[in-house]
Length: 189
Image (cartoon, rainbow, N blue to C red; front, side, top):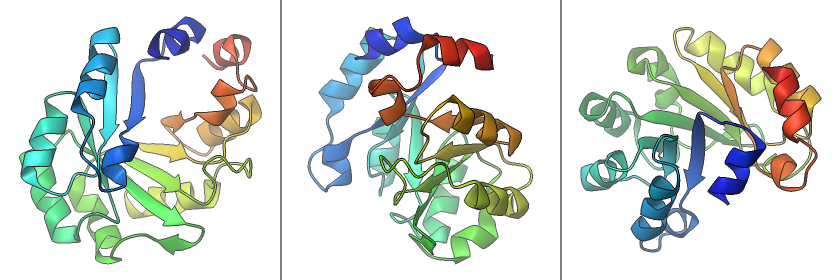
């Protein structure tokens, strides 16, 4: 799958979700290592249900750890960012409801890390990106780079995210089903 995506476009980074770990099962270290081996030059953002410093260290050995807002308290997140300042925070929402404690939002400027504006209600939904969420996070953390996630349907949505100030976009369904292809991606560069 990695080779196919890189044939489509020379992506600089890839977001990898270890669904087993996210569901409370054992992390798939061998699968993550296989992705790393398949594209050693590619920056990997790895979401693997990081809840402990040991988890953080294991993921950091393979790529950039993605911390999820619903998995950590604000003080735990702050400790993790001190330990691994290159980690990324996925600020996760289910519709309008923040998944995690609201104190996390108040500390965003202090963290100074890249943020993913993830609306899980839109993932795979074809509803379009949550540009309002992106705007809210930009106001809360003006010094952070923001990445939109969830609901991207086509190249027009990619443009809209860029115009809304997103440094990048997490896209899966629209790539896999061909609504966004090589021509559309090259047109955005």
